[in-house]
Amino acid sequence: MNLNMKTLLFGFSFLLLSCGQNKPTEPTAPENENEVNATAPDAEAKKTQGYVLPGLDHGFEQSPVNIISSANKDGKHDITLYFKDEINKIENLGHTVQLDFAEGSTITQDDTIFAFKQCHFHTPSEHLIDGMTYPMEMHIVNIMPNEDKTATPQYLVIGVLFKEGKENKFIADFLNAIPKDEKGTADLKAGKVTLHDLFGAIPKNLKGAFYNYRGSLTTPPYTETVRWYITKHVFEASAAQIEAINKIEGNNARHVQALYGRKVSSN
View (tube, rainbow, N blue to C red):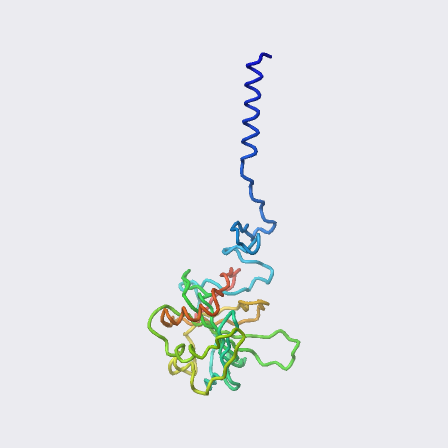
């Protein structure tokens, strides 16, 4: 082999070596197909749950969901209220703003009675309507009274969606009363904050006002014992009100979950 040929082969080998050294490293595929690689330098974890595909660690009846308004079927549940409308405490939990109800108000689905416990906020909304996310959602949490403390709690939760618009009196009545410190609580004078200022005169029978489906809590432990009722009417709150609540709790909405054959009713 002559000198020129040796030089040519050496140069070619060096080129291949250089290309191999400069070739970017391919990311390793996650073991769980529902995880995506987090490539941001400030990512808290190298793998995160994907948005579209929900995790199955908690079951097949998870919340929230995307509600397709044209696809829902007529429900057959009767919803009735015995409502004293007494909110007696407000809490800054850090991850949400919570209003607590005094004992005595109940909501009945068919023959099952639930007691009003608290309402809290998510920014942005957790439930979607026809793929649309709203800037805020309030959850009115009701729990079935049960003397067996070891039994899994049963819930009925009313989801109230908000869009940006005019100032909301209900929110205005408690916004300045939210404790500044995380984990802080403050008592509210009876009648100062009422759901009547949000809903107006609440009829005893609420048939036709909601989308209804079976799901879960949207925070740990994601218990799948929730009867969800999402208001069809979308309420208004001012941009300043929504921003003030978001400033306290941050973006605390769980990603939408798959229905897995569940039906959403128009109740």
